Structures are given as C-alpha cells and as structure tokens.
Image (cartoon, rainbow, N blue to C red; front, side):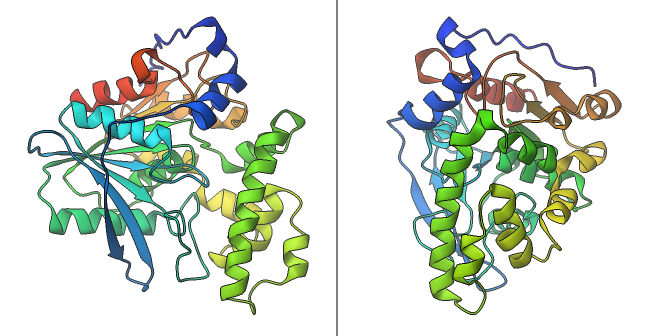
Length: 319
C-alpha cells in the first residue's frame, strides 16, 4: 500500500527527536487508570504477568499492548495507550514479558525481540478464557517487532485478531543495533546496558553454572549482551544470528491483517533498514507512516494523549 501521509505536527520543542524521546520516557505522567494483574503459567513452567484495564461498559474489543526493551506494563506509553483505549470502548491487556513485572522469571531464558511463542500463549489464554470477538495488537519498539513477526512468520492467526499497530519499530534489528552503538545514542545505550546487566546478575545467582563474572565483565556494548546472553539463552548462534532470525522486516510481505507502522525520521534508534518502504508498496496490508518528528516512542500530543495513541484508536476503529 502507498506510504500513509502523516499529519503529525508537534510544537517546536518536540521537533527535536531526543527531547521527544526523553520526555515521553522519563517525564510523562499518566493517572486515572486502574490495572488488575493476572498471572498465567506458560507451557515450559515459567510465568507471565498480564495487567488488565477495562472500558466502562462490557465490550467485545480488546487491545493487547506490548512494551519495549526493559519496559513494563506501567510505563506511561503503555498506561497512556490503555487509558485512551478504555475511554474508547476497548479493554486493554498490557503484557509484562518474562522478568519484567517486578520479579525474576524462573527460567534462564527471558524475553527477546522475536519471542513470539510467548505472545501465542497469551493469545491462546485470552481466546480460551475470555470472550472477545475483536482482538488488536499494539507494540512499541521491541514489542512492535514482536507483533509484526508474529503476524508474518507463518502462524495460524486466530480469526479474532483484526489489526495491529507498531510504533518506533526496529524492523532490522542489526540496523537498529548499529545505530544504538553510535555516539549519538551513547546515553540511551548505557542506560539499557545498566538495566540488562542488573537483571543478568540476578540470573547469575539463580544459574551460576551458566553465566560467569568473566562473561558479565566482557559485556561492553548492547551487542556484547546479545552475544553473551540473549543468543546463548534463546538458542541462537550469536547476536548476528539472533538479529537475522528475529527481525520482522523479512516477515512483512506475508502479513495478512491490516498493520500500521509509525516510524519517525528523527528516531535516533532506527537505521535506514528500519523504514520498510518496499514492503508497504508491495503488501496492501502494510500501512507505513513516517512522520518527520516523534523521536523514539515519543510523539507528544495535546491533552495528555500522544499522536500515536490517537492514531491507533482511529486505525482499529476502521478495522
């Protein structure tokens, strides 16, 4: 489908990609949403926590929200989305990936950009225990890649799944990693690495035979983390193999439900391969919107609602 024209025009302050990214990540506040936690047991014996919030009236519409790297279901970009969806007649199920809900998960493995097996289990659980006729997926960054990979990698997509929206998607994980390793992103990369290593030290206490102090000391960059932990814990040869197998870019041509991708040109986390023009032109189900501004999961908007939150409601209501 042709590239979607974007109407996003933020105030002058938020026309700086870094300011948009930092504001939404560190300073945005969302109030007035009540979440109820549900813990589900996964088929491998691990656990996953889902945080539910509900529309005022009973509804057949559900949105599943998928957070980004080292996020959780209480991040403002998740709660802000859930709040707006609730106000527009959608229940919201905000997924906390393994180890992201405030306590370590029980396995050595955790989550990663391509762990669609966990998303499938969440969907199976919801479809067999709840009563929703229309289910929508909305993912941010890593979660956007996860949603799009799931839709295009050959899974039997439940008939209840109607559409998806993916925000600030690293469609090529290698291209995104290369950007994150540049000087421009050094502060973001250090922050991510600090959180990831803190969790890895928890894993080391639980599984001392699988990770050594030498291994942890060798992690200087995010790619090192993926070489030393992500790839080994999840069955990949190395970081490059992980990036190659799990990037959603290769799966976009096969997506058969309407899917909106919104990636800003001033997103410092995204390399050139993260803007899938060809896929959007060749697959009528892919709607690609590339605003000039927005940063990474930024997209500031009026009245406490971001541009992409309003766009997602609009897109889902149309499908």
